[in-house]
Image (cartoon, rainbow, N blue to C red; front, side):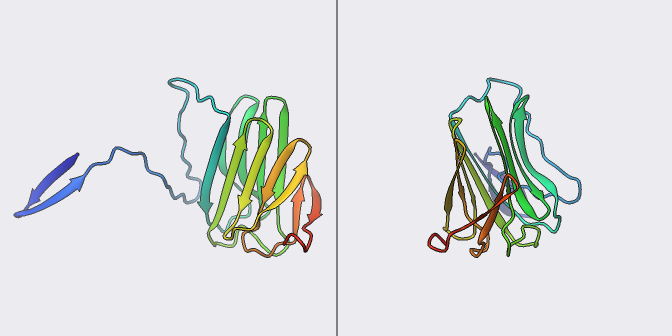
Length: 167
């Protein structure tokens, strides 16, 4: 739809797009909620959450989606990234805190979380295309570091050394 506004003999053409904004900025304690409780439930076998952030805060909630016992959270914890997920009978808690990288450095970082069915979770933190694969129980995690130089990832409070042959 095109809307034409005229002001002092100047015509301005606006194209109205009926689309929700795809980005938001927050300061302090601001947040955004989207109420999905009205209408049909969203039932899917896979989702992807793709977000970019920059902050100086070492702790805070970046994303939460859930109801009852099923949820997905992405947060900052002590300058690292924490991902929590519970679906049906499975639970996953990751804390990714590379040795040489912090996510509260006021630089842009990207997080992509992809869930497929109830068995696979892929997590990519990157400015690069590097990815690492770990088997953890019945969940598969794909983890890359933001600056491309991390050599340790913490999962379930256990430090895992990334082999030099993979890095």
